[in-house]
Length: 355
Image (cartoon, rainbow, N blue to C red; front, side):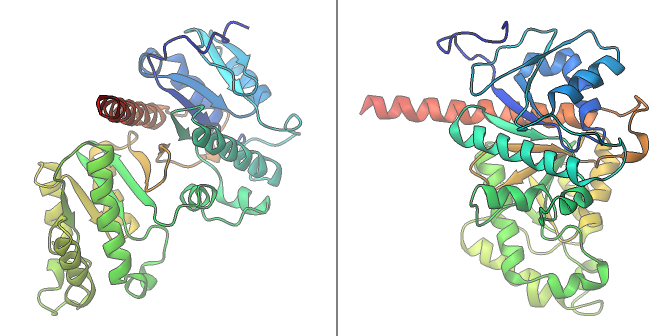
């Protein structure tokens, strides 16, 4: 098979595993479209981890001039520009399912794809993983009781501290909470959680993005940062102590700043990253400056994992109109991070050899 070559061939580009996500969603479509373009091929060697028949059918329905080829086991992967390499980890071909509908069979398949990508990442067979969207209802139907990728990946890699950072345009935003009701938010914010998010943001900016002394802006919860207790005391009671604790550890974190001014400052470069307290606080400015091209980065894992910032979009499945932009950006970021990690390892090995 033409995608197989000797392992002695020099790997000039990182090998990235791209999980299909839910086969009933737009994952297969955005993957096929992204890999049909030239940008992704210039950056990495893509390996789709998903259903081989589904990718075949998707490429055919989109009338793309690509050959879908099967990869077995842990063989070396150097696909040609017109090839879409697929590693299908399922024990048997995916059964019948309805596109655009949540089902246990597709939920179970999407979890299998993730598990295989984690396994390959931990073995060093791939340099990082990029995930297409899963459907939370479908994975719950399949018996996987994690709220999403982040928590599942933490469990699979035995990671204690991890979190979600979303990157888009000039903004890099770490979240303290994500999918929670606004009415429950104050009770969910603790000093420990905020300290953890500040620390993870610092580590990500330093170790993944190569910023030696990253500046982390910390968002306030209330308008005008509470106005000294006039509009709420969460800033003085919880957020400020967390920021000061981080500062005491040498992290360049700000005191809590009003969100309506903080994000503008971050966009202008005054801060390298921002800690947002809840979902919409961070996602609204992100999508204003980078709608359709934001990337979800899981911070704290021993492996590289990026993802699209959208869902399975069941309402447009099969219409051929899904935009691959976010996936292209997710692959771009994963390739950049993988190259950076490889360079760091090379320097480390050279230093050891010189001793």
